[in-house]
Image (cartoon, rainbow, N blue to C red; front, top):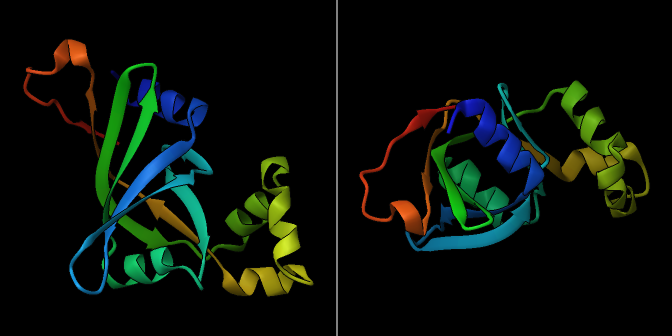
Length: 141
């Protein structure tokens, strides 16, 4: 698959499983909704009150996994906080994120605890039963 095909697949199947490590060194995996995947990175958001936020701030190394019709896309890399006003506004005003407006009394209150993470330069590989025994091929994103 090409990088563009991977981004398309991720955007069409935005539920991803994200693996982090907790403060005791134990792996933690959860399903979350990605915001977007593009040349600029893989973007999602969470709240400062979540364990996920604390884990990524402490150790930004993570792996995410997407599933689409028998094919997995796994991406390893580092998540960075993106505190740009432009990306916050894009997410806050996006129709798929209308639920965020209920998280606070004002946009500024939501902005105080809604944190946006972006994985740039991840390494992706795909897996399916058809290529189960083939060596992994990595694609730079």
